[in-house]
Each structure stands twice: as structure tokens, then as C-alpha cells.
Image (cartoon, rainbow, N blue to C red):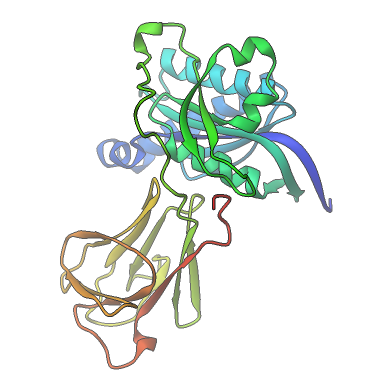
Length: 304
């Protein structure tokens, strides 16, 4: 199919609270809810000239030929989920969308437009749709009328801060929070990606893979074969704009930062900043090759 550039609107829709849902319903029932919502997302996208590109866990990525069709599709999806249940369960979504240039290859889309849509999804509250100033500028006047400025952000190659807009899809105005225009509402910086490396294994934690499991079991994303390492020892996750390391083990985890700081974790969580080494098993080894290296990769950032 080749590789080519195109302009389109990219929409991410992500379920709220899916981890808790799985723990309450179990894997089979939880997956049935996710599949029902993804099926409806594909239908709604098609009804507005769009298509479902792929599912990323419990999030879906859709594209639309125009910004107007993307806003109509995102609004229709929020309206449907507010009025219906999926496999008997209530689903809440947060949605981000951005119109711009993408690289299309093999039925998938890549590039800064995709990254920005994913980031806006992370920044959106439950039942909220966020879009960019660039998208707002190409909307038709009737759709501009249902958008309001809500945040500010710094985006790649922009000489000034840009405005982030909320799409008001709910006709009930009493559910809308008033904006304090005297407040400081600059969004936090996008974190880019966190790269984990261990003895030839390389795993990236980002908007598209926001949870990585470290442990001794073969199904872990990073497998550490050591008798002091628990089967599912620790989790590295991305929430919003922050990476976290959560120890779930018997022996604990030593976290060593490149600046020299060291922390011992046992059944608790800590933010991961900058770069360093993760020592599963509760003690620091004699060689750095025994540790899981973590590094921030900001090359994917669309923000300054």
C-alpha cells in the first residue's frame, strides 16, 4: 500500500476506569464491555465518513476526512455512551481530536497529529472532548459556536502559546463548569516516552502502551530471570503526563537515579523522573547490566 502523507482529523476515545471495571467484573465480562464499546465506535465513525483505525487497549483511534466530521463523530459517540449501556455496563469516555498532516502506511497513521490527539485525550476529563486551536480554525461556523477556549498549551513549531478548546456536546448547559479566565490554565508538558532496556529487551511506555509489567513470569513485558524477583514484580505506567513505578513484590525494588539518588520501594509507588536504573529483587547488584535501565525519550514530543 506504500507510505504517503495526507491531511485528516484524528480522534482518540479512551474508556474511564477500565482497570477497576476489570477487577470488579472479571476479564471475560470486562472484555465484553470493551468490545461492545469499540464496535459502537466503529459504527459511529462510519456514520460520519470516518473509520476505526485500531484499538489500543481500551482506547480507539479513528480518522475522519474533515474536522467537522470528527467533531460530529466525537459528539455522537459521547451522546450514545451517555444514553446507553455496553454489555450491561455504563461507559464513560474522554476524547481528544486534532486535524493535521499524518503519514499513512499499512492502514495505520503516524506523526505529530496522532501524538497531539492522544495527548489531548489524556488531558480531557471524563465525558469531555478537547481539540486544538488549529482544528478550531478550520471548523465551520456552526461548530465553532459549540466550542469554548478552556486551556493553553505550547505546541511544536509554534511561536506562541496555543489555545485548547472544549467541544460542548451535551445540550444540558447546567453540566458545564464556568471558566475562571483569571486562573493559570497552562497544560502540563507532554512526557514523550519512557524507554526500558534490559539485556537486549527494549520496551517503550507512552500514550499507546501506557502500562508495562516487569517480573520473572514469561508473560511479563520485561522478563527478569532472578529467584529474588517476583513473578509480577513491578509495573511502570503512564498516567496523564507522569510516569510511575509501582512495586508489587515480596522483596522490593531499588530505584537508582542517574543523579545519584536511591530509593527502596516495597508495595508503594513513586514518580519516575529523568533516567536511571530499576533493580528488581530488593538490592543493588554489582553490575549495571543486572538492572532495568529507564530513559526519557522526548523525540516524539510535539510540545517545546
